[in-house]
Image (cartoon, rainbow, N blue to C red; front, side, top):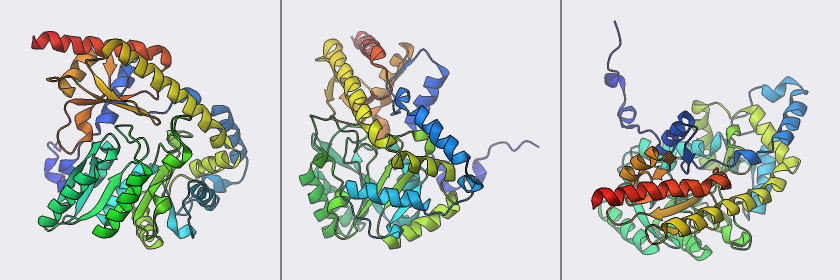
Length: 411
């Protein structure tokens, strides 16, 4: 007999799962190759160092079978050592290997944090808007409160943080975690000042709260616009272990390796490691070795300047086209690094309705509401990282046509 409706077998979490709007748009793009995509925040595939990666893979696979054997849950030891050195370059001291855990992408780090630290009586704070993967990970833990804190042009609004914190305390649920993306935030592209970073650390001490710092874009600052000091992690100024730091190779080497890492106090890393054992036993041994060898051979260091220059050129092309075609109709924040431009729609326009019309024009982007706990329907995210410069202006032309059709419909 057919199984029929499976809802009766689902757990409360299983019933509440929601597909990622970003992944959904990526699927749409794959099905329709004539689309121009400003949707998924993919790195530029034409910049993947394929020749060097092939050489590394050949060299590794000519060795013994250990390269494809199970490895330790904590990570391939030479990679952990190399990442300890990379963290030192970022201003973060890892005093023992037990403070660093290799993860299957930084998304797994978010999932581990949510599973290990967040319970049904807890409150989690996120920036408003914030990364959809964080909303999914923390939402799946089913906290009592998943609360948003507004941003202004300089990033997370400290006054609103105080207001939301006070409200949660009045409800008897002080915040346990605050999730932030300080460097070229996904989705807004904003860069949090060092002054606000220090203020967040003071707030965390006062509130006895942990900060989850997600840093996939810190290396991708646009030279001449942002200094290396401006992207220095919160974790670099963390003196009491309040910050759980996440990063990965997805934006600087290649996302298909699914190699990330987290840095936190050793007692927390121990619990995350146990939870990881239940998830995947260990991240892929070959992937970790390739990433490690790419660091050792200088592949990543040579690649990053090219990434910065390419993404800056694509940002410039997008901004120039927006100014030419949509100035006065659309407003936006110009990012100084990363992958994304955040735009506010004309009064009366809605993100989902605009996306439907854009699809008819063979253009996709991500609706702004996907990045909010609630609201955000007057915003959209435009990712410029994977769009060839030659197609960017045509993509904006399609966006302009879709907006124009909306104006006609409302008149």
